[in-house]
Length: 138
Length: 152
Length: 137
Image (cartoon, rainbow over all chains, first blue to last red; front, side, top):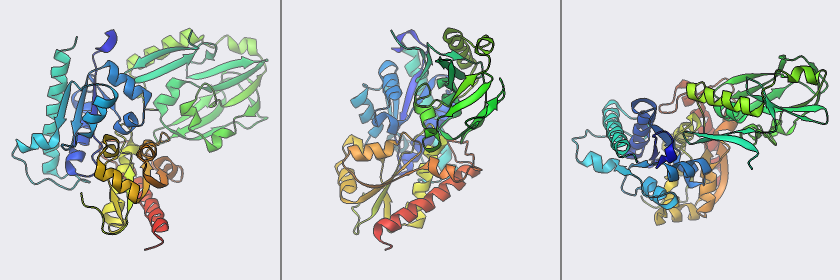
């Protein structure tokens, strides 16, 4: 993996327009990319990836990926498996939330404070997966 | 053999065309029949973002080396472009008015900016970088994080 | 997801995660589907079309679709076309920016005030397009 280049992990989030968990997926991914693990992660734009974006597809073929899906339809995971290969790790937000004591989530458009707090926990979880993937870097 | 020096930074592929010459502020120059075609580099268009507007010196205007050649505007930034040569602008790429995105999608080909008839090509060319030197400069900028790259 | 009881326009943003314009496309779509044209529009996840979700594919094939793209790469338009959707309109955030040069959205994760403004202006354009397509219903 990585062809001797820097250790990086590609994060592919679902676009998730239809539900609040999709927005959580998107925002949590952005928090990892921008704050929690900025030097270790690369954002993969899912629509561009689906449309055949060459850089997106080449990166995901050469580097490990983590998919983050809002729901069990798992669009990001399915797309990654179809166009590049099995992701190193897959996170489904609805599955994570089932195991947590979550407050009532806000609308999909604007995350309230409680939902934002949940989003930050999801981001922490993604960051842990990044660390785990990098630990097993070959 | 490739026409370009190229590198991949994160997921971004950045290219430097081997037959061109370059400035330190990320313009390229290609001399054809004594005239100089000028454009922006892959690095500059990537760090600037999606180009919405491009304005250049008018056809027929005279320009000094390091004089203002034009401006390139994206939602992220407005970049002033400085001429690498003194001369007269003999042609302007009018397609860019309708399709400024060519600067992003084809910076070394269809996205050229202007053609200048230089007053002192030999003299002005001394300060231009070879492709290889510019490539190294670009790598340095990438490592230092000088600009944030955006998806094409 | 329920099938619409009347024909709706399906508004599909690219939601590109790497650029502010992607977030703007998404927010503008919500503005239209949750406020401006709540009875006549609906959105779906773009990725569902590619993953082969049958319900989503039927929706875009049986209704008029408008895509909202963040950049000239136009991923939403491309993907809807590939899915065989009934594409009748394509809008780009950059075209709204060209008419509002004073707005400089910077933030991607949460829209800043300029980003929110641009989303509202884009939403108005989408709503006008929807009205045209439905004949002012």
